[in-house]
Image 1 (tube, rainbow, N blue to C red):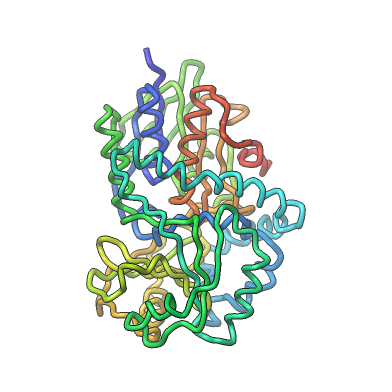
Image 2 (tube, helix red, strand yellow):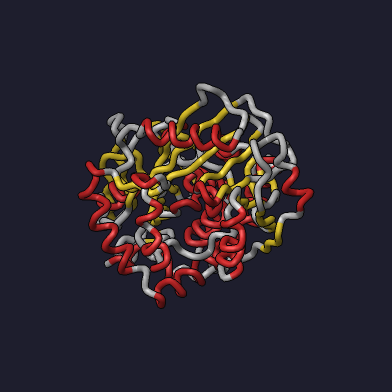
Length: 413
């Protein structure tokens, strides 16, 4: 009889892992509350950000934090009511920012990023939906000439992993004419990154393929999780109890709560992002995802419309969105001259982030029936496919493609 696996969390990491495990021959049930808009995969930028191999836990990031605060017009914010969550997390973030840990973290994250885009193309093929992933690359632009040279210098010194970049030509910058009030003063063209045709469509394609192979979707949230000699038992808020041989905890920003049920309390925080989406727009189809670095905002054209995304808001995942942040996004678009709906679809979602900005991927040392895959911060969509391959290796006993020691959740003690 095939081993049974219970996957807790139907976001992109959980869905991709469930499909991989089901295809490998296991009996898999995927538990998720069922609210599509709740997950970070619903309204994100859809950028396969393989250039981001340097963890954000670094001293340059700490020194620059004050000028990036929302109170001063930036995109970084700390929810006052959630000080009990972000204050101890911030202390661990500072501790993780030392040079040695930064170098080790860059190597670890780079090992995942080097395989991320290829893994996504394999996952898309497995889901029989190869068009959901587009190796489009992306652009970074500056509207002010004063910021162009500084921006180029910073990126020239950065480790961008498997991506490469060059300066945008004048003809390429002119492609923005008509889409913006003014042509950018300068920019960089990255290759080796990509985008999704539409993020939620990618998740839907993966879950559809999972069900088509006989996978089971279960609606509900886990309120209790027990490990015993013969397996695991998860009690849902519906009252249902699900049994399996092993469990994978991949519940995104809610993973900390589930991990505590089995005796570990990782320092996970919700890093909330905001987006606005307009079905009507005039953004040229030839433009890839574009990051307006001065505004910390990325604009991406999808099959369903145009989306602008920003913000790093630290706190708990549950509180309602902050109206000021959607207005900020809409004001940025208006200032740039981007054609956009007057009443766009507004979304906010919670990225699961650990203090060292590395994900947690592995099998619990004290509870070998418990596997985990969460904490992917801004890179949940980017790293979900390679994470699913690593989860499959852990379950089957195959050699993982990368060294998993840096991603052990026990690193936090």
